Image 1 (cartoon, chains in turn brown, yellow):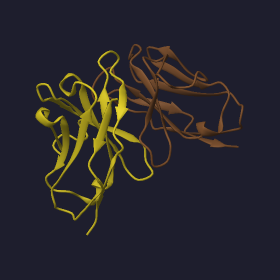
Image 2 (cartoon, helix red, strand yellow):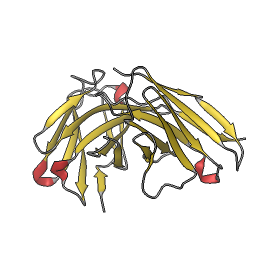
Image 3 (tube, one colour):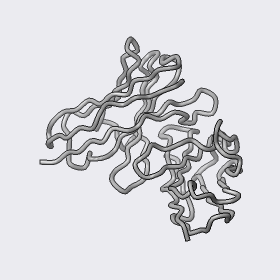
Image 4 (cartoon, helix red, strand yellow):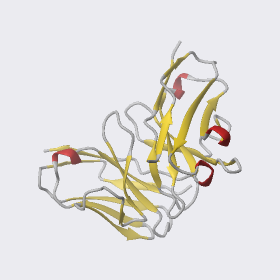
Length: 107
Length: 119
């Protein structure tokens, strides 16, 4: 199985901050990497697919980059609704493994 | 509008069987893979497996192989996740999600089905 390692596991930030979350794959996954946002009691929501493509309807303050084994999700200016847990997922090979998640909290 | 609607919450006893469902609408159900994801209380997302309703081709995570069965009935645009003998450790929220055909991302998700297994 491909292992996905996210860092940090938790992060405190303030409104308006720029934050970056990283995800590392245990082998090359080319660009088959997605990022999801999950709020308590809700289903995950797709933010970024193909490592850097913004899903329709997602605000442009979200961006993704990377290829191969190293990927980042950046939120350019935190808004109140962005405080949530974020997950990466590879879809290069089954099982389509997730990272362990990054909980973004208000400082 | 693409929608995945899952069946309601379940409370079961250890050893009982269970089948939960995920009904797709607003797209060609037989043309997209549907996956299942587990989230145990307070924990992260775990990919369980995936099915192609067009021909019922199914892939499982090794962690879930033999523990659950994924199936689909294309005549009613519904995918299923079933257990033959539940354990307390199966208590979790279960999500279905559609896999897109270009980059294999999970682009649409069901609302989740909470399964509680308790004696």
